[in-house]
Structure formats: C-alpha cells, structure tokens
Image (tube, rainbow, N blue to C red; front, top):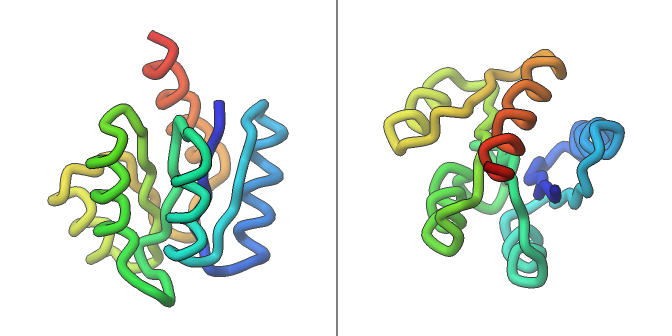
Length: 119
C-alpha cells in the first residue's frame, strides 16, 4: 500500500510519512500541489492524505481532481479549520480529521481504506 501525503508543514509531513512507514505503508510526502501532481503522475497510490489549506491551492479541489483520475483512490482530508472539514464533507469526502488529530485516529482511517482496497 502506498500513500501520498500532501502537507505544507515539513515537520508534520515527515512525521506522517514516518508513521505510515511504521504501519507498513510506502509513503511519499509533498509540500505543494505542484509537487503532489508530479508524484501522482509518476506513481500509483492507494491513499492520499491531503491538507485542505496549501500555499499553492485548495486541497479539497485537488482531491476532487485526484478522484476524477483514479476513482478507487481513498482520500483523507485534514485541516485546522472546521469550515474546511465541512466543505470537504459536502464535496463527498467523509474521511476527514481536524488538526491537531490523534495518530491513532489516522491509523484507523488508513487501515479502513486499506481493508476496503484489499476487498
């Protein structure tokens, strides 16, 4: 299983990538939408973890783009702004986490995505 992490805070991105690797995933981290698009174009992902607020664009819109390209891709949206979480849910993304979030909660969502992918 491979995850694409789109998070503009480098320390958080590194932490998330490290956690996913400890959980048995392959993980690529991107600090921008431009870099994430490049990675997504070169690799296949099972899961994308995308911050809603990014310096070069909107993570929810980007997540919609990703789903149009790969409708099997599972996506988790994260944000420190409750309005972004609500906007993501209205856009059809039900796997959302409010920052700061518990890593155990993230693992539950990731494991659920992995289980669905295997089935």
